Amino acid sequence: MAYRKLGRDNKHRRSMLATLTKQVIVNESITTTETRAKEVRKFVDKMITYGKKGDLVSRRKALAFLHNDKKIVDKIFHDLAKRYENRNGGYTQILKLTERRGDDSLMVIIKLVEEAEKQKEEKTTKTAKKDKEEVEA
Image (cartoon, rainbow, N blue to C red; front, side, top):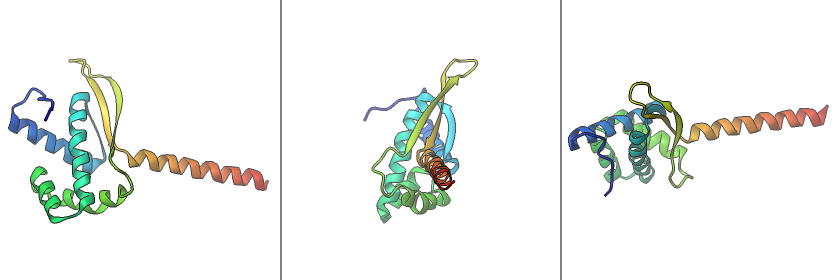
């Protein structure tokens, strides 16, 4: 399996990726470097896929990776699994920002995709309402 080492040993890297995964799931959006975001995207997608499966084995795998944080695992298995039941992957989106001052590394926002789609739906319903009002007037 090819992965980025991120300048850390195995235990530190795994712990950091688990923590970033938890933060993306809890906050639904975080700002980090591009290489970390590309790595953490794999794990967020895997956790949501576990949630969609919904069986005991998947729950135990998610608990093992997320340091036995039951609140986050419950959010994955109840909220996010229902939200993404019709989606076949690609649960995260990476938006590029500017370079960080100091070391010039590219900063990005990694967020769950559904937020952007909800905003698009709201905009389309607003425009549909405006069109109805114009037709009626």
